[in-house]
Length: 238
Image (cartoon, rainbow, N blue to C red; front, side, top):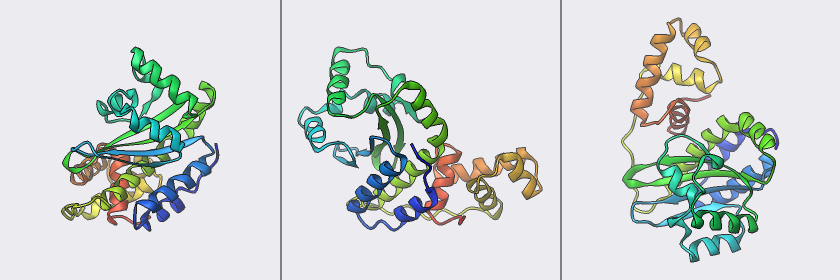
């Protein structure tokens, strides 16, 4: 479980011109993080699925054949949430869920998982997942170290995937005020709120107003998502 050059990974995602590039990118990310699997899974309002990642072809085929989308506790549990979820917090109590989990383990999916739910236009729902076989302690260490990076990468991934959706309707151009741009830029640079407010010579309360305003304009679910969207739209440059 290694250090990852996130800026380089984001730059590679920016250059992606098709879904095949997303597959290449996610394989590289999985290797960089030194975990067993990393997967992006998309479901639209019509129930169509698209995925890329490192699961074995056998597991992907089995998943589709058995229509596990209907019983997968990760899909079902994350659909009700907006924040990243550790798989251990999901409901695995039903017979179907336990059987699904046992089969997933046989196919090497891993006993640990961390999934980031995302939502897009027209009912689009997607998950970005990292999974691995390791102890609870090692997995907690991995999450503590890489959680923010994974959230940022997940939203970049989803933004690029939306660009490649057939019949996509372009989003209306979003603009940020100069102060909103400054606030997002300093957060993207890794400043905490106190340092960002001090640099902008404003109070933390005023900074929070600018951040929330930018988040609303960007349609983001949280500050990390807002920073990711601002960067992916080219509204800030770090």
